[in-house]
Image (cartoon, rainbow, N blue to C red):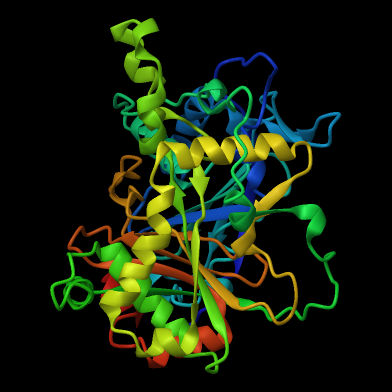
Length: 458
């Protein structure tokens, strides 16, 4: 497969501010933003041919300036208010921009092991601000664009909106989705409605063991796999046998993964599976359109909303039972714990629950481990809306793209994304404990296959 180590040398560092002067303003966090700890998310795109470099890097920088005028939170910084809660100061401090060079060919970058090849090398470390961008030239004429952003400011839906607009600006196209920062769309009800179901899904940070306490830290590791379309279809048909209603491809995959993770534990243990749910479609019908002129209706849609609109419901099951159950029954269990979150009331209730906790911060319970004997957990977040084929700055669409999210803690994270070739195959970013990776590569090897340059046609 060639060398996996990437040594990128910095050619130039700069700060890219919004092209238009932006007046300083404060943007409060919504209650759903406040559920995110201070963690950064990475995303990167590989282009086989992107010459001439200087001209194309200039295009990237100039279009970034214009994109930041629209997506101005990315040019700001997070500060604490008097209650100790994070707020966004939109002061146009700008985005740290790194122009780097790696004496390496794209085909020799071991994307299967992104901790070695991508982390801190092609996806930059964000040292300040909300967003950091790195453009890395390769000796083969290829280019890698890596971004790291503060998850408290944006979820994947929001960064996808930004990346698409940035590429559209570079090609002088009309922007297909303008962002809305209308936080009132996520205001709590008056008075807030208390629902104790959220006590099972979220937990005040004050109740967690202090960092570095008696919980042993087993480092998690990242891998990138691919799944062929035929294998996804096979999982879906297997989960819908014996008269079971047809399951989605995503639910079938989650059930498959849950069964694999269950193989790790002995018969007395349980294991948790969480699923990230986007609430935009659930909340869209609540917007009062009768007071908005029809010409402005689109700009107030939740489909344009920039920020976090996420919930992470989870299920817990006996590992021995999971191993023995047919895929269809496990898929039913996934459907059962996800379904209650697919409603407007769930998200309104979660917003109210956070309001009743404030200013005390809280976090998704599945992300935490209260004691060493707590069962293991994995979260799946669908990246099927990842617009990888749209991130074209003028020299062609990417030949590969993926999120990179080693989010810390002891909970695993898995994100299936579309292949840029749009052939039905999936790219799957995985961040798991080593023992779970070992199971994926044995029990799941017929489905999840290591990403190789030959598969990517590099």
